[in-house]
Image (cartoon, rainbow, N blue to C red; front, side, top):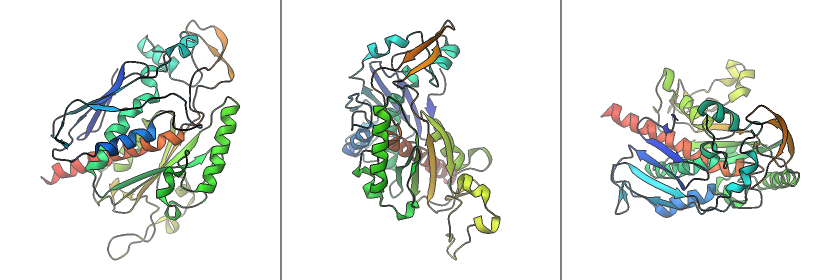
Length: 354
């Protein structure tokens, strides 16, 4: 299986399966001498871990990181940072009924057809459990990116949307509710909707919005390595993501140039920011903001028609512990992947200017 490494200069390679002994990763290219706040890293892991509230999966995993290399006396050494996160609460028997059965809209079928073998226990490598390693690496990237802030939040669940621009939101309230929506009135509606969906044995999708502030001018390479192209790749690599838009996104397609153009101020900033902080694939110093769409989780508790590995039609019903809505736990994953992209381009700029 290829495709397990992300980044060009600040690289992350992840390994492990949902119900294996452990998952983990290797970070290559992280500069030396960066003081690491291990408590801050654990706090990031706690934001993603299962079992946080009644609106996410009840699987209980402490998601404690054990660093194996690359850190000495609290600072990075410049050598590869290796780490593992042990799996301690697997219930593989919950998946025995789908050993030879494909869940609709899940990676079961494609993995089996591509590799000729499939780890049906929680989806194996296709499980969102893999993203814990991304959050660990992203937490380190955040500490490298001093002064640059990255805040993601749930902006919609199903048909329930925040009806305010991000500039009017208080990001300090993101963690005030289990749904991670900073608009508290909207958050309550989202929570109620997720609970209804869960009770009905179904799942629901939503969107996560991310805002990156204090990005310097000049990150990104023209043509194939545009900054927004790499952010799009990062987001689309996350489990269950079906869409990515930055700046004005699809709404911009409805506008005239006279409406959409961001006019300059004398200092090079712009009066508006429909460009989303990126022009020509290069950061312009304004806020970078984008939105990521997540589909409903594929495993549901309702009876569905499907096929088995022999092509026989049958009915199946999900079992075990699954998120009724993935977006609350996706917030730190989106932040992590965005931080990895920015860290990668920051290192690229260093090498270009060296």
